[in-house]
Image (cartoon, rainbow, N blue to C red):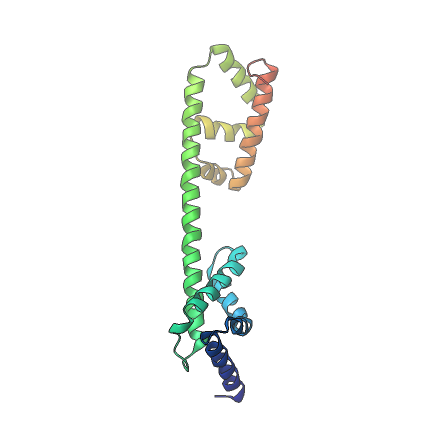
Length: 194
């Protein structure tokens, strides 16, 4: 083993012993020495780069709490990197879980909105439906097609995005703007309160 690594390992082992003997400030040396490697592991594993600092801090907190389980003289770097990988894996699972929940939530809202719109349009008087059709006709080709696909043919936003070669956000923005335009049009026709 090169002299540098031996000195480095002795320094880390001394810092660990100091922490375990009641000097928590000695842990700062451990963090300073190993933070770049821990951050690199976490950055490679988690899908949201905004979480690197938080997950790194979490890994070091866990390492501090479990420091008494480290076997002196073994590979501290490998021990710490295992903790970092586990923290990153846990964050990765949480991130995908949140994303799946959001996708299910948005799909449910879209379905309920479509159901509500169907109920409302079925109960509208014929002159209001005529005003609605007229306002729809005033929309541009792609916007009208998106509104028609989403509200009258119950196509999901993702499906529309794929069909029209647009991003999901572009479809959502277009539908939002179209709803605003429809609202203004219906106000002008006296079919909606301001």
